[in-house]
Image (cartoon, rainbow, N blue to C red; front, side, top):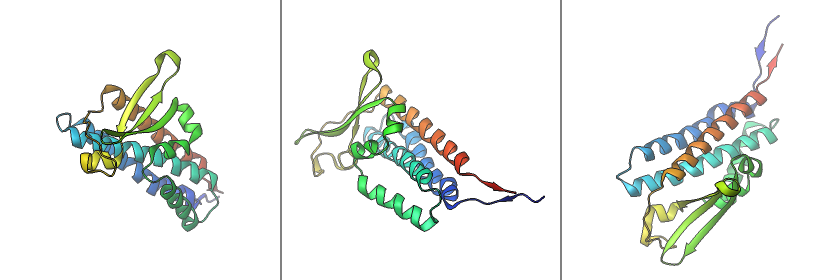
Length: 188
């Protein structure tokens, strides 16, 4: 009996496009760890990694939900969702509630004190182990005081932020693996 792999478009997208998106996030995270003296670069790379990990999880969820779609239809749905959340980390993490719960993210809030700070604050953990983490908005990380919402506070992502990015990376990687396994089909 001949066994033939009959991969659905959603599986192919998971193995190529979503995996590539995740690997870019992982590259940015690793680069941020290697730049402790370059605060602006570290801040920007951490923010980009955070967004790409979240979007990898979102894309994985969409592949599972729309597993019988054509490749074009599925990519269109993923692109539409990415455009809907844009670079807004609060909207992005709001769109993945189950994963957010598993990561113990209680709250994601954009904080903007005009002319002072523009960042996202993540409240993570349970009860006595709660931590407040800060990640600059993408625009604030790039332009600082010339951003549309001015940001003049420069602060490094500290140990807790780095640990959270590592957990988020591991969670995204596991989500991709489990989604690929779920979507893999073999026809006999």
